[in-house]
Amino acid sequence: MNINIPEMIVTLVNLLILFWLVKHFAFDKVNKILKQRKDLIENTISKADEDLEKARILKLQNEREISSAKEEGKEIVSQYKTKADNVYKEIVEDARREAGTIIDKSKVEINRERTKAQAEIKTQAVELAVFLAEKALGDSIDEKKHRELIDDYISKVGM
Image 1 (tube, rainbow, N blue to C red):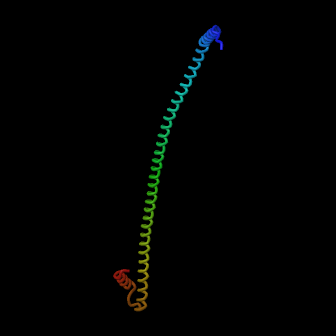
Image 2 (image 1 turned 135 degrees about the vertical axis):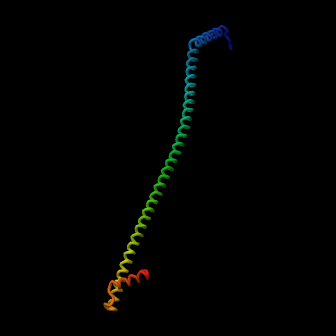
Image 3 (image 1 turned 90 degrees about the vertical axis):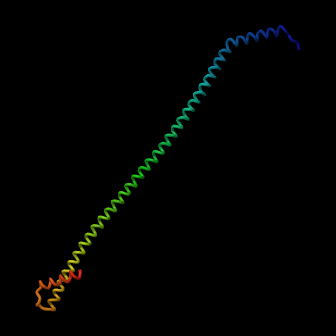
């Protein structure tokens, strides 16, 4: 292996000139492009982190709002249930009052009918007694006197 020193020196000088040219014209531009790319990636990652944090905050807010809405819904249902129970109680109470009124009216009507029936029975008993007495005794006692006696007897007996 022969080593040619002048050729090596020329190659080394060419290499240094080439390196200087590339460094002078290309390295700065490549470094600039790489720096821009690095900055773009860092900005994208930073923005993604910010967006992720915003999303987490929004998620927490949404969870709170959902929880609040559920609680509000439970409260509304509870209020309507209470209102429904109150309406039910009012309806039952009205029905009871109306039933009581009907019962009271029925009792009054029954008492009225009873009194009417007792008076009618009393009248019929008096008439029957007068008729029987007239038949048994003939016409010796007048009808007015006989009625008074029978009315007095019936009132004592309690008919």
